Image (cartoon, rainbow, N blue to C red; front, side):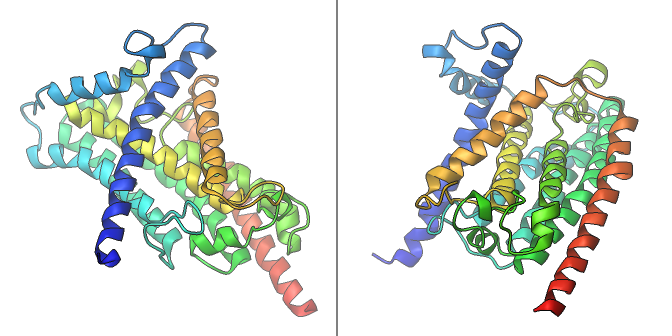
Length: 337
């Protein structure tokens, strides 16, 4: 048997299964988590503890007819949900889950993932514009302004990590954090450079805030804003059109958690120098995802102007200052060496 043929097929099936299970059961986790936070039960009727609720919801969405309202751009209206889903799945190809589990090692994997994230943002814009609905158009413009505002400090923070690690390959960035938690990029202890020891915790906070904002979740859900924009850019979507948008949102949460884990939390390495394993990687990303869920159901949605001011007036200046300090520290250390 030629492994060169079967290996990519196995990885493709694995990625599709991982993406599908996460998209389905993260919705269940969020509904149960929201129920407990708000002192109610959440899904409980379909299966034990409501565990079959995602399957029932999926069958319901697939059995419904995909209606295309009059006055919409039919081609773009149908293409937008696919654009929201495909980039998120494609991003999983470049993410290393361990030293041996990765679909494809890509030298510029950081750049690839952010390029795919931009395509996902275009899906929201196209879906809102093609719907021909004023609420959807308002939502789409909000989404663009929000994504542009928060992509800038996020990218600047990633540039800082690239400068410290000397690579744009996610696998190499993770491998430079081998050892224990004192070697992770987030902690201000025993770093290889002064910059890492002083400013990386701030970089982690900026990156995490931007990750929450990029997924359009509360308190940054200006794009949907159910209370005033009737589900925003998804107003005219039903059936699997709506389902693909929701699956894309949850997969973007997974991708954001994976990036945070690789860039700041040591990837697949254990906290006390334990043997590296995919278990540590999955544990870290699901702790981050649980934090995403907790934030959504704990903090209220803010105004669009406050949300944009947070990025333009606080996060962007801080990220640029951190980038400048990192460059200065690395240059000084180069002279000392």
